[in-house]
Image 1 (cartoon, rainbow over the protein chains, first blue to last red):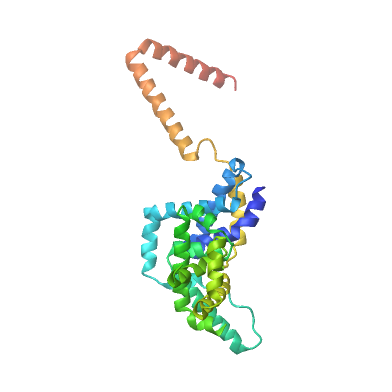
Image 2: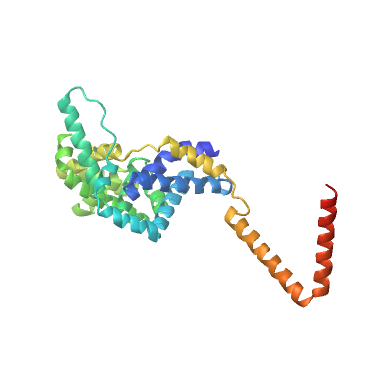
Length: 175
Length: 126
């Protein structure tokens, strides 16, 4: 796999994962960039037979864990806690244009409710959900990426979905 | 499996992550349990909304920086290390000169004479 192929194939997911872990677009960009550069530098030593996605996402997870231990970033994170302005950072892309203003409004409301409910989950649960829903990763892959047992992936995914179902019931019943 | 265990396994069932035996047991249960069937449908609706809410595209500038960053090779010595090295060498040369003048005056005078001679020759050449 060439560096360009790796970036083309995994940068969106690496960024999405970083975004759900950090909850902030600027930090996510830094984290994904750092992880992808690490991956590219390690690419010559990467075994071709194994799953490059698992390897790249694992680097994102480990870089995030290292950042959490950084006192400098912890300071900025605490400081940011005083200002909730970047709550908007996790807002999803605007919904596709709907036929009329009413359905469009409903769709926007639904998207906002989903974004807000997901934001209420633990960062690692958001990561598990993202790897499963967006990338279709198996529980075995997710367990390897997060370095946790497969049974934990299963139970955390169940609990995360259960919480989302409880807070989004109104939107799910309409469907 | 109890009803509660089945409810808790619906998430893994909807992901197709259960073994054939467990999956078969749940499929049989679903045909007679409206509550679990409704919960499974809800999981489907949830999945669609979650996908939309979670998707994000990496900024194009970030991709370019990643490729550029991976191409950059680290210099053997950073500029700060080079400067520190040059300063250390200068201090060492000055200290060596002072020590030579004090403890080896004859050799110091000889070296000084050679330097002066060379400087004179260069100056005379102009």
